[in-house]
Amino acid sequence: MKVTADLDLCQGHQMCTGEAPDVFGYDGEADRVVVLQEHPDESQRAQVAAAVQYCPAMALAVEEDR
Ligand code: SF4
Image: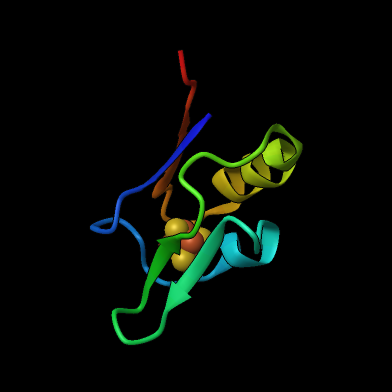
């Protein structure tokens, strides 16, 4: 899978860093999410899906690698 974050939508709520801390970080200066792993391991899928679901700004998306 490939994780993308739309930094124009992100409002720095940091819900995603709580759901999937290995995949999403936070840039305090920019007040925006940082994608730490663009291609997380399958074992992270549930956490990543939760982060995508709970992001209040709907800034996160998961695409499937082919
Ligand atoms: S949960 Fe959404 S709005 Fe909040 S930091 Fe993560 S991507 Fe940005």
